[in-house]
Image (cartoon, rainbow, N blue to C red):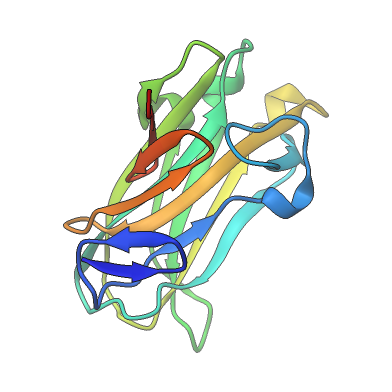
Length: 172
């Protein structure tokens, strides 16, 4: 176990990406002080960058909490792409509707989306985009983005919760 920025990571050499959007102060959030809010008909890119320290052919898990309670929200498209860092050309793409990736739901309308994927090139760019043209100007609510190697576990304590791999468990 290695401690890094308040997290315990099961592999001291592993790189993880975590974005809480706490700095936004958004009122609609899953945890913390903020979350991502966008207009769902638009292409909402929530992550675009490298996963530093990744290796060729490494299995990663992309996870994020999404508000799905209202009709049509589960049909929001998620496009997960791996891009060549020099040309920005797609190396691979995975597209599916949000409901296909929902692994955990909470009673308040939030669902944890988890997408396993293999990063083919160590230095490639990963891009994640959400869009649902059918919902027009309705808001898109996301929170707690985590990208980690599939075999690595990430832990922390936050606001009375124990957190493991983007799942929250009450400490009491």
